[in-house]
Image 1 (cartoon, rainbow, N blue to C red):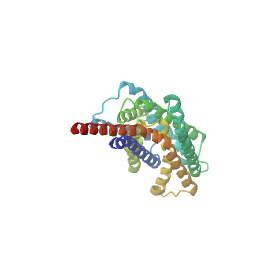
Image 2: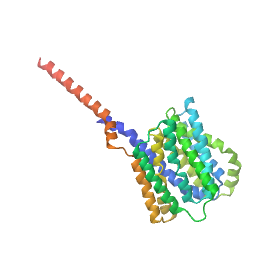
Image 3: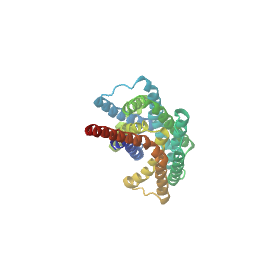
Image 4: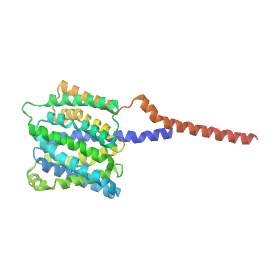
Length: 329
């Protein structure tokens, strides 16, 4: 019984880490909206990455984490360039060109690309439940996006930028997955964030100039983005990704649009329309389906544990039989 409980603990912790990630990433949309009014896309990305790098570096010192193994550097660097650097700048820029609904709709192509790239490059399975759940969640994302889209708030440039962000996001996740098999989640996240910060250093002049004039609330939101949705959420993401497939983790992020709707409702007083709430419910339902397992799969996963327990019980019974036999003789 102890083995069964302990074997389920990593899966429980991975699910908890994924939940922390999607909640913090959802909160990032609210903070980006505030900080983006005072900071340009590149400056906001650099400030966020510098705050995240300092936080992660301090955690590495406390935990005495060294450099990642050489075999993990390729995936760490690629994910840092694509996801931490390029993605954040392009997404910030794209959200200034299109409304939030259109941005969310286009960027949510990312999980589908992750599943396809994961199957092609990593050999990840694509079970029917994952595909069905992603279809349901994407329909929900489309519903949320269309319901939040404003008239005349989109541009071709903005849509292209958001699409590039989705491609960079997918490529970064798929590149990160092999590195997590060779280095810890904290190592991969820390040095990926550093790589992204180095890529964004050309925006240092803009950051310094804008930080002098920006209101305190915008700067605090930028720091929040670096410490929580970047340092903490990317680490919990990496922890969970190391324990499941890229496709299933990508599907989990479909919970973000639903959480953004709820957070905007409570924090900004933006009352969602009924169709928006319905779309958010579809997103959550799709995530539940994509992360579920059929009964046969659960039984197959538990079979080795049950066999081990039966073997232990048999060994114990045999020992007791031999002991009682010796005593009777």
